[in-house]
Amino acid sequence: MKSEYKIELYTGIRPTGDLTIANYVGAVKPLVELQKQGVKSLVFVADIHSLTDNEPATASKFCREVVADYLALGLDPSKTNIYIQSAIAYQVSYMTLLLARHVSVAELLRVPTLKDKLRNNANPKTANALLLLYPVMMASDILLQRAKSVPVGEDQLAHMEVVRRLARDFNTKYGEIFPIPTVQQVKSLRILSLKGSRKMSKSFPEGAIFLTDDMTKVKKKIKSAETALEGKLSDSLQSHIILAKELCDDHEVHSKIDTIIKDHMDGKHVMGAFKDLLTVIVVDFLSKFQVRRAEVVRDPSLIDGILKEGASMALANAESTLDLVRSSIK
Ligand code: AMP
Image (cartoon, rainbow, N blue to C red; front, side):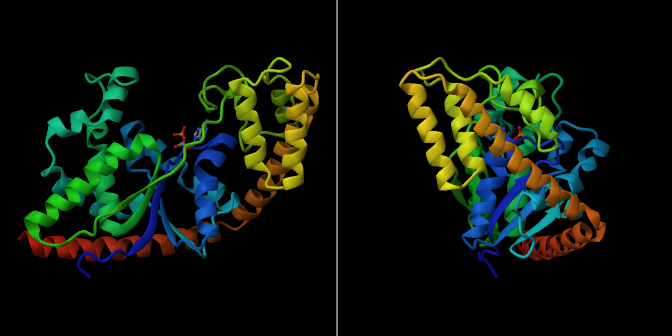
């Protein structure tokens, strides 16, 4: 058991409602693709992490909703186990305390993402201490499950360094307890808002397409999307092209997009045709998603069963790791 991995691929999802198509393209689709390649995964809904920014009631409110979204977007429960993080709240909390003893306040304050946050959108005088503890909690999640590979974007690389360092130091002090997790850096796609140059996000709903949007709204939003002047390739247009291709895997459709963009670069007025095609692609994707989601939520016992199975697996892994920890530290 010592140093043995138990989980091939491990990742967390945020318990937020109102996912956008950018969330699908940037976060859900890469996971579904790894699953298609046969990688067995364990996914957790990070409601304990969400306490950093939310009241406990809000943190737990969207857990089942986001699981329904992910299932309807292609997560296959026969290949991927899913649990809600708070199902093992005791184990996560205890492990976090034990690990926190092995990291200094100074090291945590040096983590670049924290520095960025404190500079841009959190005030050190008012931000709560969970913000500082985030990498330690992350270590606790990953190490308890004995995860081998953790896919992360560039912004999470520094956190993974803390996780790996903590695992190594704990092992050096108490014996071989944790297998060292490896980092799988994922290419980060940045889908831009339909309006302006910021990224598509639910905090700017006018420029975002939500998975729950009705088709009339989608058509209207795409109709007023920013594109580019004839002969020019703006960041917006490039992002719309990526979005269209990511939402539809059909090669013929990809060729149609390429032809339109070639005409556009030759100075022709084809942005109307491009928007029409983008609309067809988005409407097709969303209508299929919405039908699947309605099926997923029709029988609540489906999600209950999936979460129960996931929780029992996560609990078994966490408890056997904690048994090792308890016997090594005494
Ligand atoms: P958020 O809910 O904004 O924290 O996003 C969760 C995840 O969705 C991010 O970590 C990204 O992987 C993905 N994501 C969100 N917005 C975008 C975007 N505009 N373009 C690409 N991926 C995105």
